[in-house]
Amino acid sequence: MTFDYSRYETLLCTQNGRILTISMNKPEQLNAASQLMHYELSRIFIDVADDPEVDVAILTGEGRAFSAGGDIEHMRRSTEQPSYYYTSVVEGKRTLMSMLDCPKPIICRMNGDAIGLGATLALFCDIVVAVDTAKIADPHTRVGYVAGDGGAAIWPQLIGYMRAKQYLLAGGVIMAPEAAQIGLITFSVPADELDAKVAEWADRFANGARRSIQWTKMTINTGLKQIAASMLDVGFAYEGMSNHTEDHREAVDAFLNKRKPKFSGN
Image (cartoon, rainbow, N blue to C red; front, top):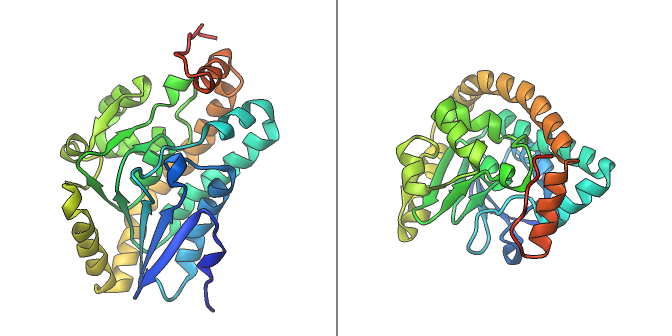
């Protein structure tokens, strides 16, 4: 069976040997997830898992950002059309669970900032190599939203509950070097070393004992999948509730009108 990755419109897929590079390809929007990209992300790692010609996947972004998260139009439509939000919940959970279920190593090439959903996508990868100027943040609360699309599940597992609360409750930004130091990501490297470091790990996995690598990943992920499966349901439910708050509507309107939001607490 041959897998046709050219059918993806927002994901640019290139294969080199048994290594598949997946680039989020909306550089003008800093690779913020449009409706179509959100859907395509929910399918791509299922293809990677099933493709017998691929042993390693690299996830990256075109342009200067890894991903700015969800785009504002996606947020606006979600507040106005509940069915639109329900669809995004199904896709969001499928994306993250398919990353955990994919037995093949997924390497994040964090070429720039990873914000919100972008940070979650990065942290659900197995190895994260970030350029040292990259910022990582999950600022859901700063737009009146619950960090329910995976951040609340993965950050505590990587850096502990206290540090996770520090960054998630306030929506704070962390630079790649500090993120590597505290174990949120694997490596922080200068820009001119990024590709070499990613290639080093991709080649190591591609040339290693394939089955043992894959089955070790699945063993490690057993507990994480249990945590993620339960927490994503709760997180998306709370996020759905926050989607209808006055504060979230105010945040979206403030962003569209390029002003600072004034939260009421409602």
